[in-house]
Amino acid sequence: MMTFKIKWLLVVTALGVLAGARLSSSLSASAGGVWQSNAAERNNAQSGSGSSIDSASGQVSLGPPKFFALAANAAGQIFAGTYASGVIRSTDNGEVWAPVNTGLTNRSVNCLVVNSSGKLFAGTNGGGVFSSTDQGKNWSPANSGIADAIVYALVVEPSGHLLAGTHDRGVWRSTNHGQTWRPINAGIRKMLVYALVVNRPGHLFAGTGSGVFRSTNHGALWTR
Image (cartoon, rainbow, N blue to C red):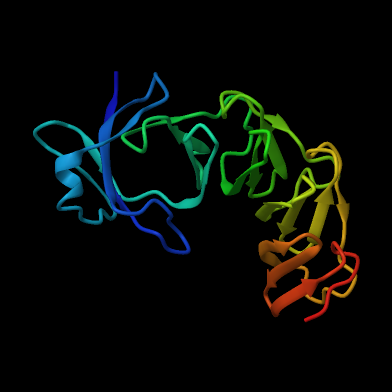
């Protein structure tokens, strides 16, 4: 059985979002893989880069993967969205991480969000939105209308409605937990939406390629 040794430093940046830990483990190609944090190495973490083969052990050391998103549920479980490796989850405060990707057919995850009922949503790079009702164990498409969209941002409004910021399609809203979506882009002149935030009921902000747009009426109209 082929075994890989993975070590990396995860830092909060635009391209990586797990701070302060160097994770290492043996990743079984047949078992799907487990990442485990090494407490000793956390005290002297260094960034890995590129890849190399240890001539003595035959292990392959890989550079750091790209981590795009983090989310946590009420139970304290932490979810990380990655480029090409889907979602990984920790149930022990970040000590051990394991992939949770059953049904997630697009493994490039740009954003994650958890709603008040604990439902987890993942925005993907060209596969729209997926949702999980069992802490990531199983995923289903939640993307009617945006099935092939690149989704950069997800946010839950106080009403429970879900908003998605997309590449070249602007902002979309779902009022039924991701079953269907519709665009809400009146006034937005740049449809590339990287970030979304709600600071009070009905007040939305969208970070785009040409500045920040604001709506004070639930997205009915946006101004910059």
